[in-house]
Image 1 (cartoon, helix red, strand yellow):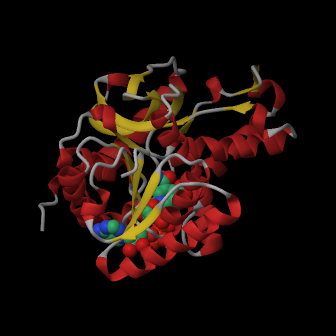
Image 2 (cartoon, rainbow, N blue to C red; image 1 turned 180 degrees about the horizontal axis):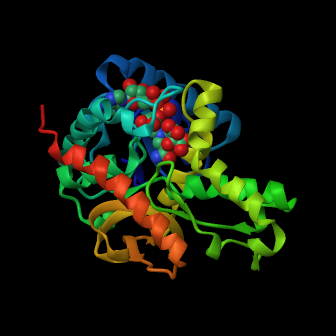
Image 3 (cartoon, rainbow, N blue to C red; image 1 turned 180 degrees about the vertical axis):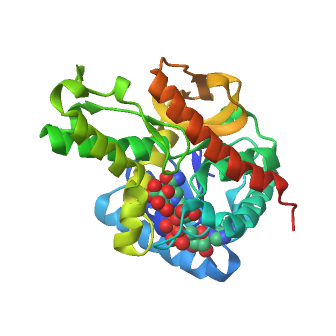
Length: 315
Ligand SMILES: NC(=O)C1=CN([C@@H]2O[C@H](COP(=O)(O)OP(=O)(O)OC[C@H]3O[C@@H](n4cnc5c(N)ncnc54)[C@H](O)[C@@H]3O)[C@@H](O)[C@H]2O)C=CC1
Ligand SMILES: O=C([O-])CC(=O)C(=O)O
């Protein structure tokens, strides 16, 4: 029996496969790539391909494909991508009718087999799906997070780096709020190695970058016909790694708000510290009045789709 950490990836599609590849290369633990019974062989094939890759690259992680929840039992980390991605012309919220029952069935599996895991939800519409996962499992808020802010911030940082013609390594920025088109890129906290971005990039260019960041997911959907998977997988792995290695990283993450920033009973992206105990701290940073107003608008959208979820009875 292995004493390595165990990572259960629920959904063996585009993001699931890339998650497995990254977790394996980083040797974060042994990996179970889980999908529905109709895709069990697909998950097993992907797992085998990734295990064979280990002898070329040289990593020791074991990777198993499965459609049996028992194989996920005792996972330290669960990352959920189960559900469908959007197609060009759709919004993330359009996915709710299909993905809600999927998240509910995944929540039942997590509750029974992985009750001690740190759970990262990726499925869309993100803020509402992670809300439902927490509600249906009853897990404490320290152990349930949604991945969106790390990805949205990565997009913001890339566009800033290209515009300022500086290394991506020197750009620090954060996107808060819901994972929708009214997300909140926080300009007041955006620097290029400590120098305010507003000093280096003209206001109208910054406005264009903010607009592109907000529709960054849709831009890729339009080009590919399905949604992004490389950067989303890396973003979730950064969160998993922060937990597994007790890194205490400050990462924008969707967490259950209980009064922070003036919001209650809602999941939305805010800056948090992720370490070995999961969400160790929610940071209430100073925002400008404009940013507070943008956050209020984003929260209203998130509340709308969360209310749809709350009002939908189990099938
Ligand atoms: N939060 C974020 O920033 C992002 C979220 N997404 C979302 O992530 C989700 C997954 O995207 P992809 O991996 O590209 O989709 P995909 O279609 O490639 O993979 C999804 C997988 O989930 C599986 N699945 C469906 N029901 C399941 C269940 N009950 N249990 C286990 N597996 C189940 C499907 O069979 C499929 O293999 C989508 O909802 C997408 O919108 C995508 C990119 C970024
Ligand atoms: O745009 C989508 O549908 C997928 C997603 O959430 C993203 O890439 O940000």
